[in-house]
Image 1: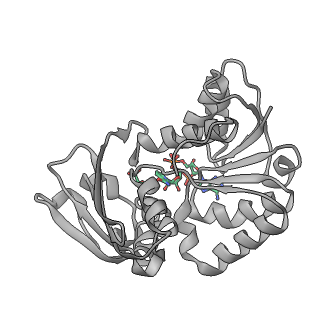
Image 2: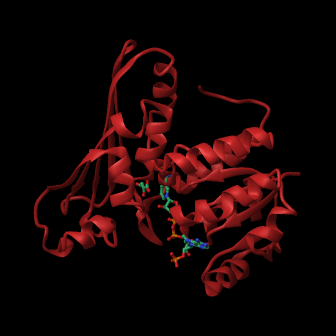
Image 3: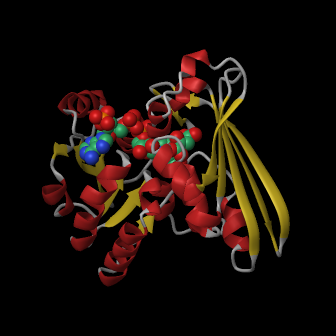
Amino acid sequence: MLRIGVIGCGTIGTAICKAIDNGIIEAELVAIYDRNVEDVEKLKSSLNSCRPDTLDIMDMSKQIDLLVECASQEAVYEVIPVALLAHCDVMIMSVGAFADEKLRKTIENLARNNNCKVYMPSGAIVGLDGIKSASVEKIHSVTLTTQKPPGGLAGAPFVDRNNIELDKINCKTVLFEGSASEAVRAFPANVNVAATLSLAGIGFEKTRVRIVANPALTRNIHEITVEGAFGEFTTRIENIPSPTNPRSSYLAPLSAIATLRMISNPFQIGT
Ligand SMILES: NC(=O)C1=CN([C@@H]2O[C@H](COP(=O)(O)OP(=O)(O)OC[C@H]3O[C@@H](n4cnc5c(N)ncnc54)[C@H](OP(=O)(O)O)[C@@H]3O)[C@@H](O)[C@H]2O)C=CC1
Ligand SMILES: O=C([O-])CC(=O)C(=O)O
């Protein structure tokens, strides 16, 4: 059975561990880790049958087949190279870290040299199947428009740097327009989806991102428009925010769980 380690015991990490615990994912939960000790203990005490150890990345990677990162972009730098050097496959949620081309190349080389896979779930967006197919031929443009309730953008460096008072926004307001590369640095915990979209399509510089604070919303909306040799498509998803983290849509942990199920399934569906 696949032996899994999880870094990050927040909203997504908890959902993944619970899915292993209740048999939705067929795997062994070997170890978990979070920089907040109390989050690790809270998660452990919520599990019924799994008894994961608390191990740092060095010890964890010696005992697992697959490392799941669901912590932060900085955690990608800290844990993914270590895991790949130990011949573990990895699944990354904080995909925005890959706006750093040097990190991306390092991780790609490590994965190739150690014969490992790097999985990046679709997360909170729909349409990656289409853009992957479309990218076999020429893609002219990719645009992501993300709308969140203002509170779902709290804590973003862009918001803090520009002294944006989110609680005073009383109508739909475009906060940011730029490349995916700029977007994932300005909003590292809000638009990792822009990074996944970039990697599937035309890259971080050509993918355009618009981020909108909309007080009329209770959902996180991501709209993607792709134009290319194949024609044109638009996808739109209205995501219910996760109850424990309004920045992260509920579909994101579901997508992580679905990816882990796919890994151990002989049937691979979709592009
Ligand atoms: N790809 C996608 O579509 C999506 C990606 N995400 C991303 O997935 C990640 C997890 O999301 P979510 O579970 O909602 O986040 P949470 O904030 O709920 O949980 C993350 C946990 O990881 C901890 N953590 C952060 N950095 C480190 C580190 N370097 N080492 C150890 N622990 C760390 C956090 O601690 P602390 O609270 O101290 O920071 C927190 O306890 C985030 O980066 C998020 O932006 C989210 C939604 C969609
Ligand atoms: O969950 C979402 O709606 C998107 C998100 O936070 C991210 O991509 O980081």
